[in-house]
Picture 1 (cartoon, rainbow, N blue to C red):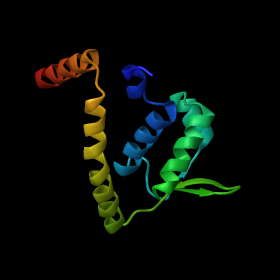
Picture 2 (picture 1 turned 45 degrees about the vertical axis):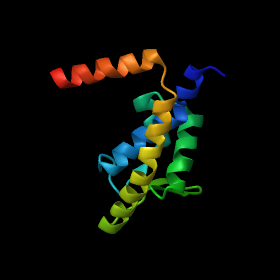
Picture 3 (picture 1 turned 120 degrees about the vertical axis):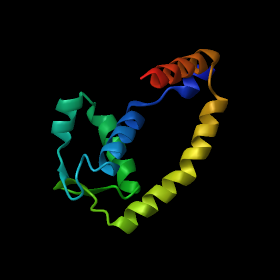
Length: 121
């Protein structure tokens, strides 16, 4: 397996990241029922990767999968939110470190360009 394959992100991972951002930023409100069909239509996501992302977000207690009823964003108290953020902080650093070790020269150059563009903006 070449280094580029290590850094490729699966569709279900992208969807999971995007949904997590929307949930934690409250763009998708706690307690809201989520329509799989609407998400597929709105974002063009595939059904299988979306369901995989739902499953992982459910394991993280961000979604509740209710058989024969659908998917609901787990209502979060302030204390729940703090716990989620604490858990994420323990994972993000090591994950970023591992990702950096696997960067190719081309990917590092692309990151440098992105950083330069963000400074300009």
